[in-house]
Amino acid sequence: MDDVREVSNYVAAMHHGLERLREGFPLSLRLIREIHQVLLRGGRGAETTPGEFRTSQNWIGGTRPGNARFVPPPPDRLMESLDSFEKFLHAEDLTLPLLVQLGLVHVQFETIHPFLDGNGRLGRLLITLLLCARGALHEPPLYLSLYFKTHRDHYYQLLQSVRTEGAWNEWLSFFLEGTEATARQAAETAVELLRLFSEDRKRIQALGRPASSALRLHEFLQKRPLMTIAAAADELQLSIPTVTAAVRHLMDLEIVREATGRSRNRIFAYQRYLLVASEGTEPLRPSLTPK
Image (cartoon, rainbow, N blue to C red):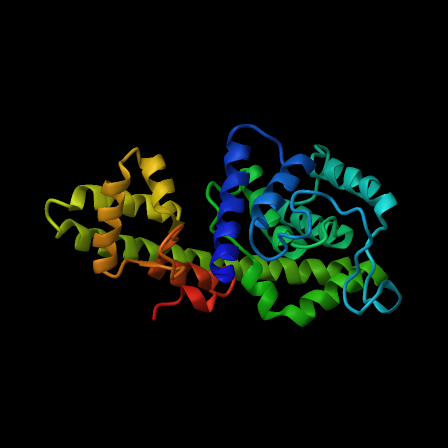
């Protein structure tokens, strides 16, 4: 259940950030705190004050600051660092290419490490949100998480080299190569998802009379591949029994499966969507793979 919750929170955090941006809210420290609260809600790190900047010292690697690989700014210097970070986000006189700016932003955020937990997840999520905020993307198909994880040791080595040696060129080369590789993967994933949606739509249409509500739910799942019946009913303005019946039809077609194993507060997953999409994002958790 924790794995399902973490993936669900990641999706929810991304959508929360995008919705706020569409409302005209700037990508600010306030919004970063909001996104962090959603990201850690009820999942890994939920006990570490989600949505609140840290008030104690943290460190990366080692058992204490004295033997840590890296020690972020102390609490009494944290807001000074975050204020500078926010000003860079909104600087209008920058002449650097957008992707270079994003590479700088990511390093600075991970170096500041403003939360007690979830900094890595949020730092990767911010790359995609910034691409959307700057108009480079309309939807978030570009996640560098898998690239960073595939090259985990080199990624951490380069971050540390920037901090200790100012090795920006090496880091930016890595970041730009990762962006190119991820963009190619995202394009391939998009084609595969469109094919999947089309095939599943045809299977649903063959249901006959129940197809109408099932098709509406299928469209909803294309935006929210992890859902509850209550959330779908509210969004689609359908009754709980109608959505429950539609879910049952999609389960019979093996398009959707229940992901928690519980009888209450269940979460349903568009499983093949998640399997395809996971190849360009975080590795899919075992609890979401088909049995």
